[in-house]
Length: 185
Image 1: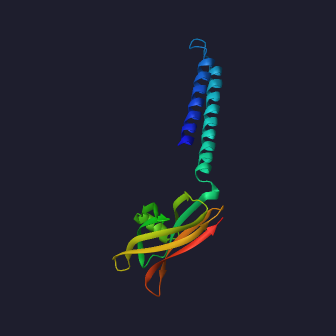
Image 2: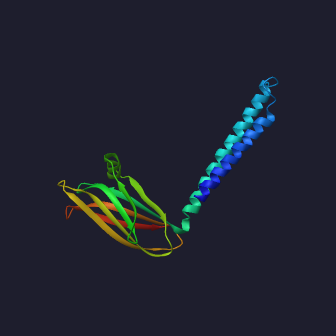
Image 3: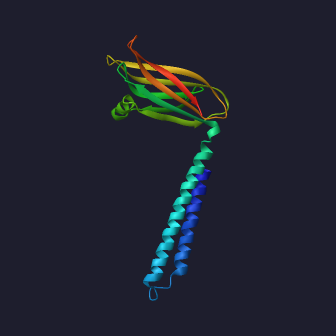
């Protein structure tokens, strides 16, 4: 929130500078000529581009401050085929605390079934042991309501942790299973 206020302050400061520049360079309507208006317009455009560049840099800085790589955890969802389970929603808990949930539309579900992968959570965790619980709600092959859940213990150190939750068809049981794959960057 402080970063957002700082960002707004910088933008307001630049806009005030633009106003002062415009009024300082204004020679009045009787003395205005095309050349001075052209110079003023190009100066104004230059200041606008500088404000946009600064805003972009502040956004990147804000992201780095909110989600530093040393504390970052990202969770992704993917679906393999989807014949035995049609995903409707997912609920994530970390250390038994609800962190996010997501309801899927038909279009999003089809994208996952065609090989897409979705980032459902990005957050910060302290170094140490953690437990991720994912609960998938949907329908089985016969159209009945079904849930699939998985719990995964992981160690968070100074590196970014990325966890993929894969809903896969198990042809031997004719059910879907949830597999966990973890990457440390």
